[in-house]
Length: 110
Length: 117
Image (cartoon, rainbow over all chains, first blue to last red; front, side):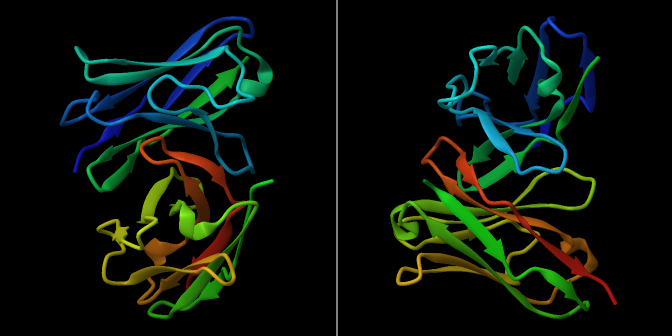
């Protein structure tokens, strides 16, 4: 199996832009879709990005996703940060049958 | 409206068994991929198992041989039978609907399983 490595935490000020990385340890990041989930304290996760860069309906366009084959990583970018964006963010991908989640990144908006 | 409601969690002794259920509404369980994801207290998400529309099931190595995922079309419900439980299985268990090759689109509220003597 492979690992998805995320920074443990990131912080940024309201109105700014933050990018959270998700690096795949083996196999190509482009081989399987990457999803991003947001989990606010005390709540179930919700999907903010699917299939690398697609936003579900209802997710603001401040959220965007991308992949970079050169670094074998995926990224979640949140622009125009709001205090309500403060949450844990998890990337997720596949290895054929198996699912793998990243360890999660705590985003603090201060 | 799509809804997923888990139940069956609780306190169980090491070595014991528990069956979680996930009642679905707003869609048909057998026409969708469904998955269970767990989250130990204060930790990250961990994939547990998936069932495909054809009935095929797959499990994480950490639960293989101990957990069994099944579904009941008449009740539109998903079941997770968990045997030989250990403290490492303590977690909130989420039931979720999967879009093929696109991850999870709906999550349940979760049910807490605590394995302790």
